[in-house]
Length: 244
Image (cartoon, rainbow, N blue to C red; front, side):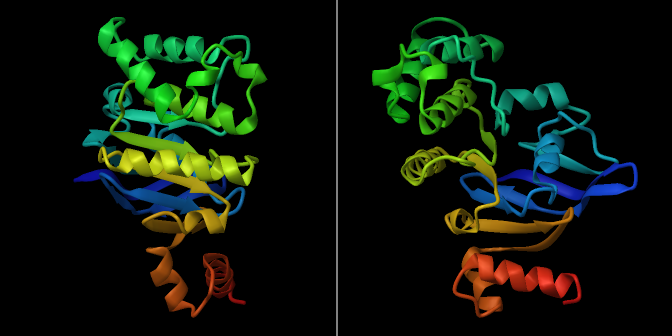
């Protein structure tokens, strides 16, 4: 099943084209990496797909919901972690999860309690459930944020550079959680500027100055450029694009 689809999705800010005729499809049970440097258009794409921002032209659907015409209904099926995900530092991990459960209208009761227990175990946060969010390490904050984004069992998960500034061990643990989600057929759109991290994705979209330059598996992109790493391939692709 196609979980995300864009057709010529474009967003302008004055004369600046932040996203330029983006065409991608992401399947259920797939991690799709949106890869590019700062300012490439990754965050704008996330905001367009989550209904936070309207496109200048083009259209997009997430789990068969139109991102503009059905923006409110869209929120029932998606989880979104922005770069500055809003954990409340004066609340405990458990209080934060319950707060987001209320926001997503997850009814109190046995089913909600079981879901919270599952998420705490899933993210290895059970021993820290009564710790203030402000006292968590960077890696634990990201895992707590992910637990909050998953409390309503979304079918599509948007993660905007969730491991930025997180230590390598925590990044590895975070990816272990994401791979488990794939077994439940969750579609994950993951933006990152870490090219080594992008190699963990099933497919990647290389985006530069708002334009999608390549969309394929990491191995196929490396093979195309006879490159050992995705970073080396991306550098060659950008040079070609800019006439270098």
